[in-house]
Amino acid sequence: MPTPIKRTVFFISDGTGLTAEALGHSLLTQFEEVEFKQIRIPFLDNVEKAQDAVARINAQGESDGMRPIVFTTLVNQNLADIVHQADAFCLSYFETFLSPLEAELGVKSSHTIGRSRDSTDSSDYKQRIEAINYTLAHDDGITDRDLAEADVILVAVSRCGKTPTSLYLAMQFGLKVANFPLIPEDFDRGQLPSTLEKYRPKLFGLTIQPERLHQIREERRAGSKYAALPNCRYEIAEAEKMMRREGIRWLDSSTKSIEEISTTILQELKLR
Image 1: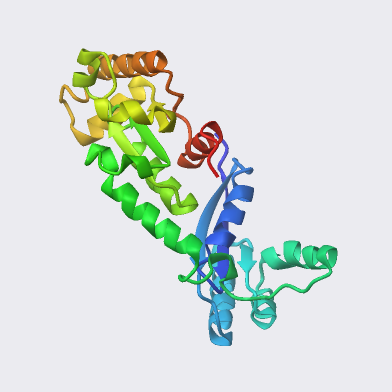
Image 2 (image 1 turned 135 degrees about the vertical axis):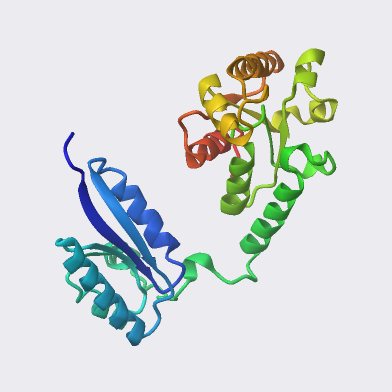
C-alpha cells in the first residue's frame, strides 16, 4: 500500500475562520490520496498576529519539508499581504471571488470584517438561537408540547442520527426541529405515537443498516439486548415497515453525512 502524501493546511481569518475552513474542506475532500493536517488561525486582526502566523507557517514548512497550503478570508489587505509573504501556497477567498464580483456588479464591497456572520442583533441570528433552544427542548421525545411550531419532526429508532441532524438544521438554517424515537411499544401497537398523527406533513424518518446500528449501540451498551444484532434487525425492519405504511418520507443514514441528510430533508419537505 503506497504511503499517503502528507500536507499541512492553514485556515486563516480575521473572524472565526469557519468560512475559510468550509471552502478549504470542500476542495481538499477531492484529493483522497492526500492526508491533510489542518490548522485554524482565527481572529487575525493586527500586524503582530499576521507576522506570528507567517513564522508559524514557515516553521511548519521546514518541519514538513514541504510548503504548507494556506486558505485565507482576510478582509484587511495589509494583513493579507503579510500572510501571503509566507513560504506557502496561498489561496485568498476574497481575491478569488470578491474582486470578480465587484467588477461584475460595478460596486465596491464593504470589506467589513465578520460580515458573513453579522451582528447578534440580526433577525437571522435571533431565529437561529430560538431554533436551537426549541430543538434542545424537543430532543428524543422529551416533550410533545408546541409541536405545531416545529418545522420538522424526525422519527427513527435510537441511534440513527436524529439528534445531530436536528441540531445541525437548527444551527445552520434556523429551523425548529423535534425528534422522537420509535420504540418497541410503537411496533407492538402497529402505529405512530398518537401525538404525531396530526403533524404527519412535518414528519421525516431516518433508518440505518442493522450492522451499523449494532456497532454504534455496542459502543454505548456493550453486550446488551438493546445492542444485539438480532434486535437491531428487528427494530429497523419494523420502523421501515411503519414508515412505508404511514407514508413517511425517509432515508438511510448509514453512509451519509449530517450535511447530506439535512440537505435531503430540506428538499423533500420543501423548507427554506
